[in-house]
Image 1 (cartoon, helix red, strand yellow):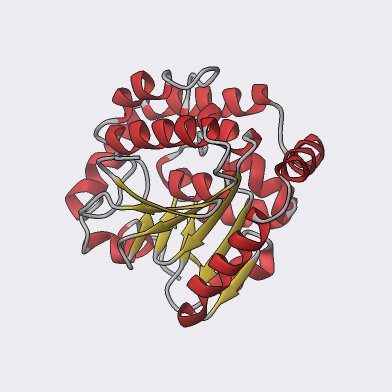
Image 2: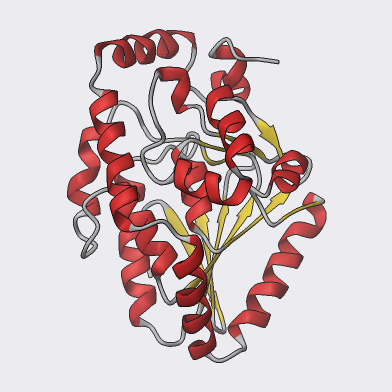
Length: 271
């Protein structure tokens, strides 16, 4: 498998996928295209049972969507059958026969958070991982499943806190809230995730499929709810107020590598 924004290495039944989209791992059309192609190819390969996603950038896992190119995603997403939006693409990943694990170092915000929430499991570096759903700072609902996942994982009160604060949450807090499975020391994270992935990959694929199907029947929102959130985001992002807020944030450093190291401060939301 060869991609522009992903580095892929297979070990037995495990595919290790490194996100490499400099300068700060924005989710742009090229990365969307690569993710669609990766999922399609991996699902066709019966030798692949587990996908592990990690980042080549220690500061950013997936920062967020490229706000200057939102209208360019649909063509790439549409290459996945039944996925007319990023929300449905990510839900498709949750429904896949493949077991997916996110190994998180650095910042994972907005659509980046929604991507890891779509994965089956999430493990994060205690020292470096930061999580945020900052869309409400621009008057928007997360459009790719964030509200659906967070309400189920965190409960109503904590989901409200996370969404309405639009703030950063460290790995220990994310673990305590249920956003991730575990926070681990950075030095131990890779070995732990690799060991878990290989253990899962050594078990029968039929077990993976039936477990995912039954857990998703309880824990995954219907496709219609993901579509509704995507529609609300798409409508909101065209709003004059949202566009004005995006422009003001761009002047303060939004979508610059250095500026987003302290994104919540930039948005006037620092603690």
